[in-house]
Length: 169
Image (cartoon, rainbow, N blue to C red; front, side, top):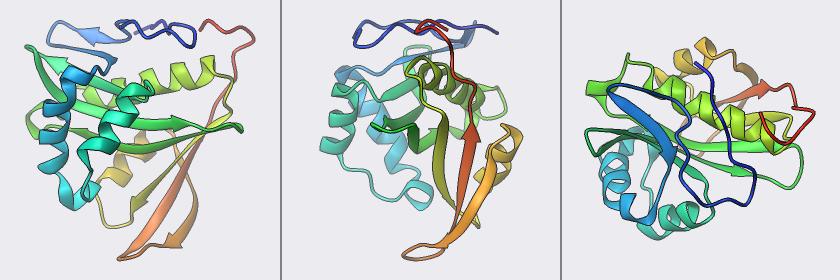
């Protein structure tokens, strides 16, 4: 499935990926309740995400949401650094929407935007004991290193990207 990314610093919502049962788009401030509800129901995996921090990420255009039937069913929060890296902070999909490619499409959308911003790789950290590690492996991320976290060891996953020659992917 192909996609289009609006060039920076566009704030309009653009459908990136979607199927008849969900679509992926940039988050808006009106999405905060749905995002926060999902985050709070996945504290074991994500930790505690503060509402003001999530709102700041939305204002920076650094959250994509997956929406089905006017309800947020997943999101990915990230940051494009000033160097060649994009950091994926958080990704989660509601259990009843897993296995439907929602998470995969959230990451694909992030990859397209990351390439459009001429970043060379995506980096993320995931506790070694979470099933999410298999998800990252299925998306061709590779373990860069394993480091000690505050409470448990973390896999540091990296996905190298092919950078687009033009700003439009």
